[in-house]
Amino acid sequence: MLITIVQLIGILIPLAGLFALVAGRHRSDSAFLLMLATIGCLIMNSGNLMVAISSDATNGMLGLKASAAGSAVFFFFFVLFLLDYLRITVPKPAVIAWGVLELLYVVLFWIDRTRAVIFHSFGFYNHPRLNIMAAQNDTSWLWYLRHGFLAVLLIVGMVYYAVMVFRTKVHSERYNRGRLTGAQLLTAAALVLMIWKRLPFDIVPLASSLALLSVVVSMLTDGFFGITDIANQEIFAQMKDAYFITDSMYGFLDANPAALEIFPELKDYKVGKRLPEVLCQRFEMENERDDELEYNGHFYEVKVTELKKHGTVIGYAMILDDETFMHNFNDRLQEEVREKTRHIQIVQDSIVAGMAGVIESRDNSTGGHIKRTSDVVRIFAKKLSEHAAEFGIDDQFLAHVIKAAPMHDIGKIAVDDRVLRKPGRFTPAEYEQMKKHPAEGAVMLAQILYEVDDRAFYEIAVHVANYHHERWDGNGYPRRLAGENIPLEARIMALADVFDALVSKRCYKDAFAYDDAFSVIEKDTGTHFDPKLAPLFLECREELIALYEQYGWRNEPAQRREPEEPLPEPTY
Image 1 (cartoon, one colour):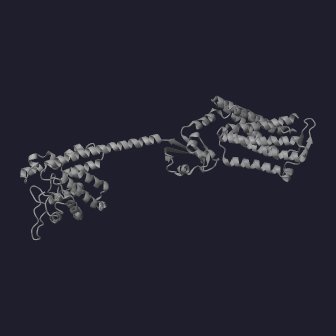
Image 2 (image 1 turned 135 degrees about the vertical axis):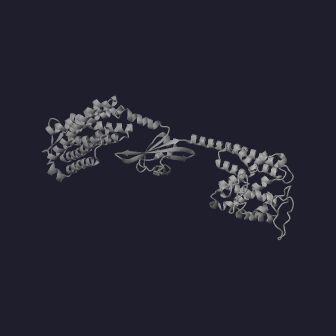
Image 3 (image 1 turned 90 degrees about the vertical axis):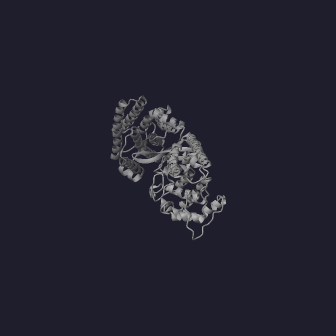
């Protein structure tokens, strides 16, 4: 009766261990290995109890088979647990080879014919003093070899753990390793005793349960796996960022409350089920694992970490950091910056346009010139966009030229009213004074637009003002530049400026007929005008005539010359 009670205790101890592991929700590799060892211990003790209470040889042999299987499971995973707890790496081939040998031992014991040959025949009898059924046979060499190997393995482990007890400075870890040293001592002592003197009652299963007892007690008091394991669980649960753990195939393993709040469907996920596709896509972006995820109106910074063991990826950890506030704040800030920039540009444009308007109100001879030349440039720019590659320009460049066109004569603000408002032709001295307006305009625009962020526009506007009176042959002003040394934007402006001067009535001349104006531009191509640009300008003939006719910009009908008459001398 006493032996039966002792064996029942041997069963209850691993049962309590399983309860502690499940209740504690320990997920480390060490906890998993210990759980398997505990299951093996439970099976081994159950088999031993079956032998003790069996009424015949058949039931007794069934108990021995269960005990042999449980013994193999317990010792294999218990030793692996001891190694893993100290982070000792054993080559996989060695672990696999030992596992295969343990399996082979169980198979040989379970098959009646091989058991009879290797382990000899078993006899069962009622022990008179212990009042239990006992097994008796001639112990085989294989039994001695296996038990001896296990005893040596545990003794070596016990010595190593004992040394680590004294080397460990962490108080809780010293207690844990001390308990495991005692567990190995108890189990190794039982193996040695069974080898030295074969007892009628196998004490190894009970010794294995007692070895687990200290570990079970520690787990029930939340102490065995130490403060680190408990702290990790607590940190995982309290993290404000969403945290996911998956296997190597993106199968669900665990998620903290913050992650479940974002993806509530994960609460119903079973372990191993593939995560939602929106998350799997982030794992599969091998070269862009750190990026931004937009989900349900929120923006998350994504961080993916590979979880490796012995150099092999066994899973992934993903953190989603909610950056919605900063994302929206940055968007608002950028929009405010853009709005202020637009406002500044509007103010600057208004200032320049206002100055241009002042100039035009002072210049009796060129009323409406700024508006007309701006629209001419817009039509010409549309044509040039069809040949952008040829000139190495883009739509942005043309937009800058259109915007700069109204500023081309801004330098006239520095010209004396007596000259600017003169109703007739200029004297040579007056003409020389008038020729200063491009350079003066460039200086003014450089000062007005100095703070503009768009440096490309700044340069184009300054060039248009400074060089729109230069000629292709180098006889223009103010710097007598020639050919492609004249900035392209100024060459474009020159065509629009001259065309409007030709077809518009001035106080000192009548308006040219359209045909005459286009003939002048054609004749001056290669001398005054860019030989590549001028033909394209002439292609805009119909659009330009329609523009001037639509707005009534011809103050009076121009008299078309007769074919035999020479072209009038242009004055612009």
